[in-house]
Length: 197
Image (cartoon, rainbow, N blue to C red; front, top):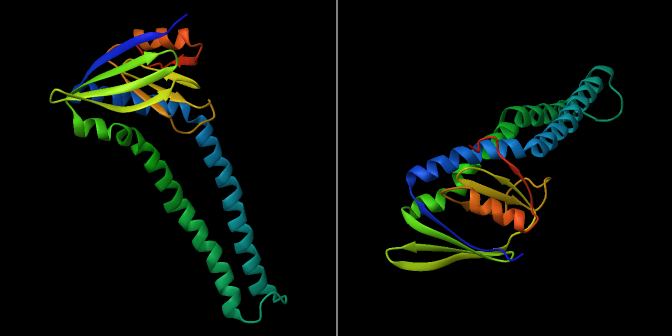
């Protein structure tokens, strides 16, 4: 079965507002793997800091031959205290904040160009994305449609695999039926987002 489809969309601020909301929801649905990695990193890093702090205090109190001066003992302890504070109060919140801003980043270029006409030409598994602005058409990108996808009302995102953190293709659309037919035609494993009406 040939998958030759043209998906046209009028990209404007209202559509992009919906896209950004859906992306936040869809990425939170797909980010269980990322959250697990963050949790594992936390469970490895913070106990190491605690071990370092306890080791430093042990050295200060019981005076084994690990360090020669109280300054070295104190610095060893302080390094692990600073690392623990930095991770807990700065590094992890920074990662979470960046992740929350990611949907905004994904639509930033589209917002800067909007309003414009978008056209996704799909021939087989090749998708070519055209933009029309001021009566001038340009090719934005072309890629192979493969991997897995999360399908929404205004946007569909493709990943290399379900364990991937970030999407490698983002398709904005006015209505979801055409891209769903394409994914079915290409036997792409996809799931419908719960934000899909």
